[in-house]
Image (tube, rainbow, N blue to C red; front, side):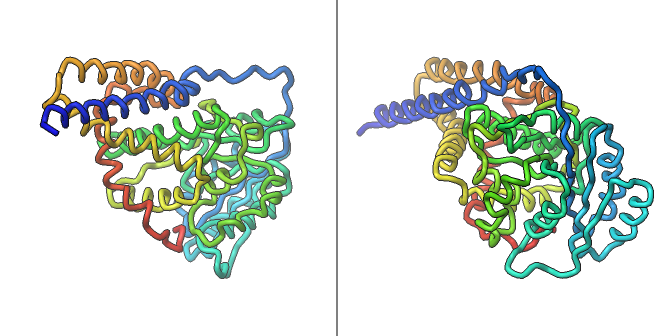
Length: 373
């Protein structure tokens, strides 16, 4: 085999990878780009239990909890904070808040759960404590984007809906790291929202997630993966979500917001913890996510080699096709998730994703740490 044939094979591989990428954009991601919630003929409100688990989160609770407590929601609701063995002043802070906000309840755990590492035990306690069928989950470091968060999230429910996937965004701050974190968050959300719209829901994020207690008990809570520290959100949704029982909510009033990690080290540690659960997804989801990641990872190296050693005009035609489709679909997706200010940067950050995959590839094979805070 001569060099000409080798570069032809490389070019053909580049074309194949591009076709795979186009498939994901034109079959999955376009669904979010064109998505419009169906208008509701009737309006119904449901009692809601908001659940927040916290461990040594006094500072975050002081900053963010009022956002959940001042919600404009005319129907019965409660806010439950599960204080998981905190050593800080969380207890005293919650006692003071409880004097002002009667809808606030807190459960104080004083003993570690044996053989159940991570957040799953305190979250299970919170769900069992909840008075109402619909539970709405968020984290202590998150604040609702509006006073209508509860109202907007529960509006999606109907008789067939058991799970509602929300968007947990990060505050927009200056700096490269903040842009990269927000892009990765958007990119992940674009995937799980699009898959859900395609009838293949595979995950949600605990920063903004709602489901009914009946589906939690039907699947025996987190018992199928209690030994895994992470996954209280994505692994449960991966197990329980179906094409008929899951809906998305991308109303901007229904978002939650949190501060992005301020250092590369803290972000890498956070993402390593999250990605360590992917190996436990259903086989179809692992295949679809793995194929997309592999094609995305290979796209730019194959592009560079093909440009240098093959017919650059043909290479640019293939690249331009993918770029055009990407540009057309990404903007409405970004606008729906209020991330359109990053749109001018999308090509640069898309190239950066090659290095992102290199950095976090090892997380897939790492054993998760047994602490959640």
